[in-house]
Length: 308
Ligand SMILES: [Zn+2]
Image (cartoon, rainbow, N blue to C red; front, side):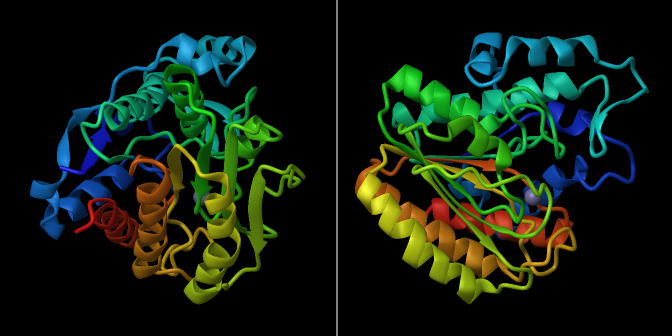
């Protein structure tokens, strides 16, 4: 099989209150749609995430920050608010270690040639988490932890991080600005949360787009901006921050993509990976808050990864 699906029960235990949009039901929305799609027999789905070690986390985050999180684990049944939409319950830190560990299992699986690619459907997401702070529902920057692990374990010189979430992946950008071992390509709604300054750095191809941009506008950015940069860079691995909140049915953002756009973007990345990266792709769930469009879009993403 080409594609591995990784998740973990801890992703269901981390929750930030009944009204918070980052709900454990997001994982069910994906797995339900995956079962209904008929794709299940073609996906290697028997994999439960591993737990990342402190060493893995500390390649990206500071010891002070890790200690801060450890010192603020709330008692069962209570919450600790870190910022307005980033909240810990007693299971959150465990879930964060397993969400980071999913990426590490995926990296090993693609480098051992067990599969070509993997999709990590875990929570909490990661792309807003900076080296020294949580924000935007993100605690550990899962994709950055996987990237640093791949660089250290497999001696990589060049990897690409693509981020198609509706929100700017400010944490990933902060962590890898001016790091020539990573090229980051994204688009994101602007002005919009997190409203952090874009860092001017040669290895960043992050394109702000106005609200209500549609699929054809986004496809043009992919073709004219991302693809030439990726071709020039010749990555040994492609990582994806796969947020599905730019979908037209997702009220979190105001971009107008649909699931066929996610399929098209993933097809382009699969082609690039075949050409440059021995087909290696590891993808991470970021946003996506409308259950129906999240499930449908994630399945189209996996369909493309599996070449089905
Ligand atoms: Zn998002």
